[in-house]
Image (cartoon, rainbow, N blue to C red; front, top):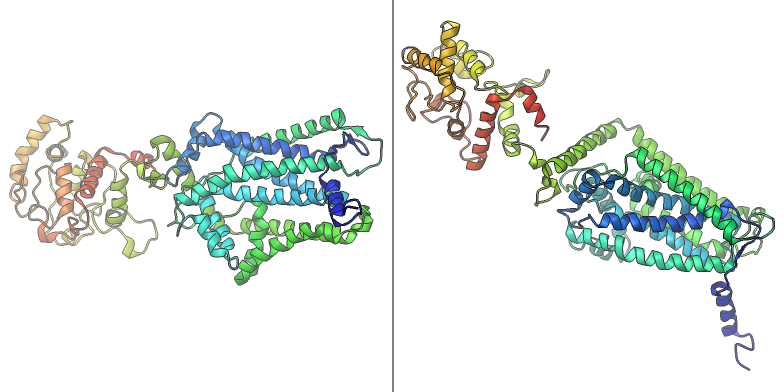
Length: 580
């Protein structure tokens, strides 16, 4: 007699496998149809929904460090319905976590983890873990500040795993640090491996669940799956879709922070369903690494072990209060930690200020990307596309402190030290005011030259008409095209008498004062910035440092062009350039 016929180990194994994996598919719902049984159908729909929206996004997405953020910004701001599709994909992932969690709780309450449904239960837990991993791999794909910095925390936790931690980090990063290989590996996981694994396990999970049928949670006559339960599935799914659309529209879609910048710190936060673990790490202090690894293992271990711990066949809730109470305790703790995390952030005013600045920064990046495009060098350089970026950056670094007024209340060492330079600098009005009071506060008044009566330039004392004529002469040296020839000629005649002893309009010639040939032109500014101590400029009377050794020719020329632009600019024109 064979072992199978004798009821030996092989026969027992075959019976157990048939009981759990057999092909029987009940066509009725024991106890009657119910909306409580719709979670599986909703999850199936959401997975298909995520696949479809993901395919649409992949058609525009570029998985490289230089192009990822730009492609997502393009989806958000320049493609038809792009922000809606991305928002639906983003919030659809959160919906899967919520529905899967409710499905898990409902299954536990019904006792549907007991024999012979252990495999269905374990597959459900595995699928939930894979969905969470799916979310992690997707969070970094926009290559923005939020995902970039959050992923560093996640990889750091994984890297702390004993024995295999370093190998995990190496596989995740694809090198010593974050780069193209990091992004492409997470992209491959998100759109290739994980969808294939989740799809296969979902099919198996559904097959086994159908094989065993529903675990009745109410008494009543059996009902056919079609149309009784199918109709309820459709209604519940439609309600979830309506709610999802409402959330997407009301929230404006999915967030997109500024381009990933390893050199700029960011207050990264994980997706909301990981906030409990984030808060636990905060509370654990120096033991955060242990807490981050042990807590998920304990929670996951409990749910995985539940069919082994609760082996009695009785499915009544009263008979399972110990295990259901433990589950409720875990879930309550997770909920409490999640709320504590959000509460901690909401009460942190400094964090709120930093987040507000980060939002402005992100909005600025998206505006520039839409208006000017993203440089081939990468999204982080989108800020260099602002008008006169190089010149304004150099001005802010090397010139602003001496030539722009400090904010009210600033200390003495931060006050302006030289002539004020801003919109209108070098135009007719500015020149006329300078001629009338060259040692005034707006001009040389704060310099040693302006305070030395023997060296300072005297005021040009003349009629308003004569001052205007002299200003026109000097304005003409800039190369401006809107010159009043009559005023220029009168000014030239007056110049010979009033100014010729100290100044010259011949190129390269200077007297006791600086030469004025091409005054206010790009060429004049370039040479003055290069070496203000040159004899044709201010010579040893200048307190301004020379920049021909610190700045390149291109940089000095850019600054000269900016100063020429200021001549015809207004305060509104300067503000319209936007921040750097």
